[in-house]
Length: 257
Ligand SMILES: Nc1ncnc2c1ncn2[C@@H]1O[C@H](COP(=O)(O)OP(=O)(O)O)[C@@H](O)[C@H]1O
Ligand SMILES: [Mg+2]
Image 1 (spheres, protein in one colour):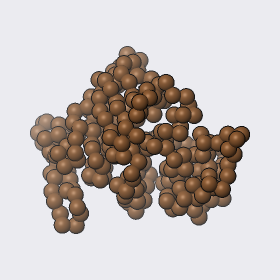
Image 2: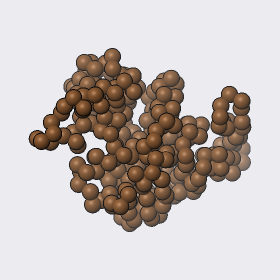
Image 3: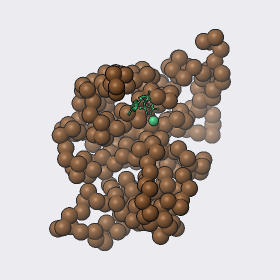
Image 4: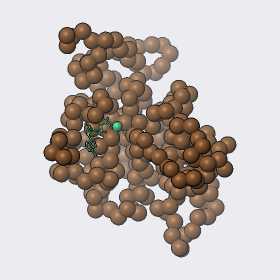
């Protein structure tokens, strides 16, 4: 599914949070949203997910404006994992992932063998099959994060919106998520802190103080001229024979002093 973000502006308590943000995600492509803390990444993802209504602008998913879709239709199209998704309820891991199927179920089509297969595959993909009967609230932060992602996988949406999905994860599971993003043929937008992870995405958008300051291919965007003034660091893009993409290294910037 193709996503168009058109001239989105949003203020909260008179404070501008997003300022005229426009970007597109082509069907099947992945977009990394990067920017300093408080730059508006989570807010933008919530606007795209239809959870926050912008003051101006529109989000169009294929031919539908997100604001006009019913919650059920929205959930069939968009799967969202928030930055600090929480479930306080005592619920077994399997049941938490099974909740992802809710938008597809009705009296006429109750949870069946096809849904069971989808739930099992999602749990397998996130390596949580062994936790099926464990209570969600007894899991570690990283395990919970994988359950949340498995839940949106089970939702089988056409667009994944993931807010810092690698938060709380150890390096093995971070790489597993990034590799999953790289392999996806579904449209994905994800907020990321580790700029090196953004190289696997088709496009990178850099937000600074609510404004889109750069948007394009990772190799072109993740360069010193773009990153240094936004993050106040000294960035060096380098190539290595170990990876099929460049890597960034960072040092303290003395430029602003
Ligand atoms: N509900 C809210 N009330 C007041 N300010 C908010 C609210 N939500 C977000 N903000 C502010 O909006 C800015 C952007 O926040 P956010 O989108 O969470 O940034 P990011 O995800 O890039 O760290 C921050 O300055 C934050 O304090
Ligand atoms: Mg955030």
